[in-house]
Length: 69
Ligand SMILES: [Zn+2]
Image (cartoon, rainbow, N blue to C red; front, side):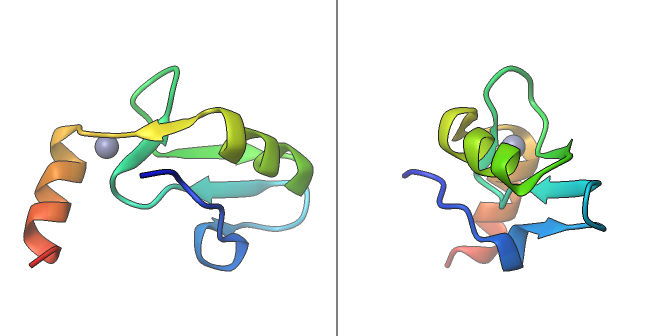
């Protein structure tokens, strides 16, 4: 499964200080984190395309097990 950026659902914060909250099942590739701050939407798009991988940490697995029925 590949992450598809949904700005409305996954991004909040004021302009210039955005937070991208990945849905359960995804994380950033270089560490087990699910949220990251960005300065611009362009950076968010770039990161969503290149830096997001599937996540099977305990939090994600627990959440998915609980809600995916
Ligand atoms: Zn996770």
